[in-house]
Length: 250
Image (cartoon, rainbow, N blue to C red):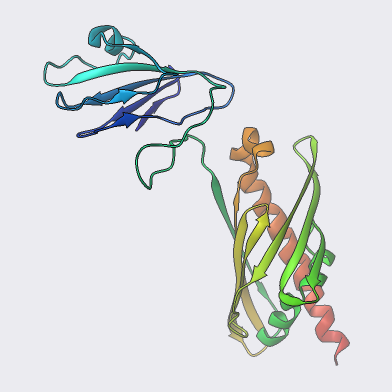
């Protein structure tokens, strides 16, 4: 696939396609134009909702970077925004989208607290809202302690942001790794890793991956560095939380 953002066109180039063609493409707030290029032997059947212009030269002239070739045939397709989304005919392939769906954030910090204490503090999920800025509540399910319900509330980018999800804690590695993934709600997953730096300190590495919510797609490019700054603030507060836990046990 080639996506031309300036001309708002999607180009699908295929060496060998048989059967029906259905792009299943709906870009936000605009219409899209696509060019399908195949070998002469290909005779795709188009869905009724596509309007077809079979003139090869007229189609290729719409894209300056394209050049006419006598060895291939082209079909011009216009797919208007708002049309009903359809499944792609390519088995196992999701419809093309120019929007990045997932982002990853990783922050790390060295904490002057023994690894075992830091691990135990982070394992207390219901205490996480005390030090993570954007987490408002975490509730462990009584009938299944591996599951917990999370709520996120924060004001950013000029709007009130609220999300929730059900997460499952995966099998941990004591004093080394805690990891999780969401089962419903806001799609996300992550891991916390603990690296001993001596008898009384360790390095904590926190990685969070998430699907960019539709609400925040317009600010997706700013979302990742913003969340990384929040996660770092969370680790700074967590370091104080773990230190205070150590002092209270003395």
